[in-house]
Image (cartoon, rainbow, N blue to C red; front, side, top):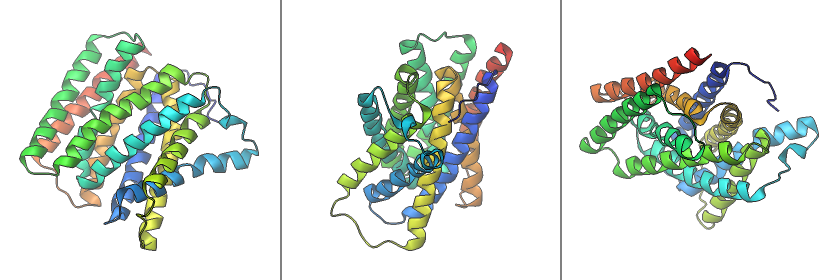
Length: 291
């Protein structure tokens, strides 16, 4: 699946942006459907639903060879990381407005870019340095504002931790995923995360509204689709560049926050968001220049 060989990195960049648009819609469904349910139960359902796109594709192809692996220990580690990412990031998103949650989460590309230089020996240039500094200014502005204005502190801390874990999860694709298929890298981390959450949810299940269940399942299903696209992007472009696609999510968060959740962003949120968008443009400009 997804064996197309794109000649220009900008095309892979576009795929990453589409993946994060899908993630934003998925987060919205889960945020609406979460209500007052136990978080591990919500994540058990959403992670299970995330496996469905892969299972559906394998059934359609009538072949499960693409989920065979040469490194099951890698998938186990990624599955544990995925469970930690789901808990910290999704819980943070549920507890905070998207216009605050996404900018904080966008410290993940900064972490990933640094890791790319340290572990993958990716070259560092002026554009990358300016982009990292600009992004961190935006993240610090919004994080500081959120603490000062009394937004949920647990959510802010969870998102900062989750951002680091997202970067580590993405880095594993670049470090160890070359011999693994996009399908296997996407499927196993969601499947193992689902098992972990089901084990954590024993004796915690409660009656749930059918509409809420449908919303959570839809969100999880979309996460599965987004994961396939994102893993493909990460396998076909430098981590420093692929991470920049994450910046597109801030625009989606602002729009969804206003339209769906009726949250009017403050001027600090807007200024911080503009800094982060600018940081993404700096890298994209360099990427196009390289093309």
